[in-house]
Length: 130
Image (tube, rainbow, N blue to C red; front, side):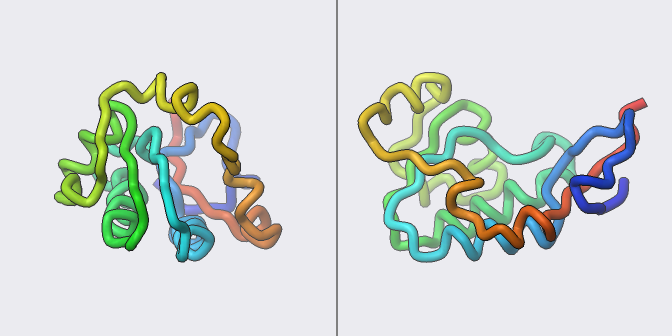
């Protein structure tokens, strides 16, 4: 397992989690938000140490003075494992339906809220998939 820039992932390797620079950039971009709909954990959260970004995001978001909604069985399981499930309300195991339920709500994609420098500095953790 190595941490590298996303553009440096060798052929045959898989991305298994976010790196420190990416975690910091996402947390900085989400500071001050008023509501969050989280529809899926990050990385291979079922397999430590690849649960790091999911755990960090869960702890950060659960502590925000914002409405935080968890959608999807994997998401709610990740929050329970991180010990922050109570910080997300409501919670639903119907993750696939969550984007449809948000129809009519302005949705931003990650690329819309993160600064251009994130795309240049973003790091991920990767391992040889072979």
